[in-house]
Image 1 (tube, rainbow, N blue to C red):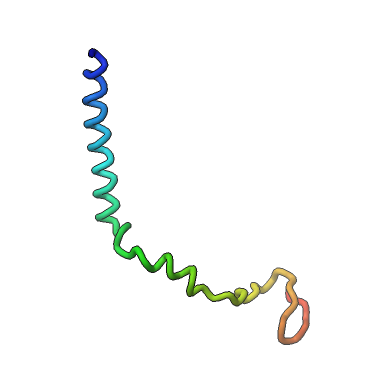
Image 2 (spheres, rainbow, N blue to C red):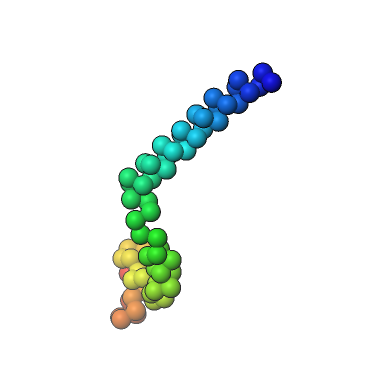
Length: 67
């Protein structure tokens, strides 16, 4: 029975901390747009990105080595 003197305040403090974290997530815009991240995967462009200069890759237009 003595453990309840520890567990009840601990659980109340835990609920308070969870509430504060949830409130901060709401105020920070965490839940504003729930659908776009899922659609970004579907609408993702499958083309490879342009190659960066200076890394020694072949230039697609001229066939010359860069860098």
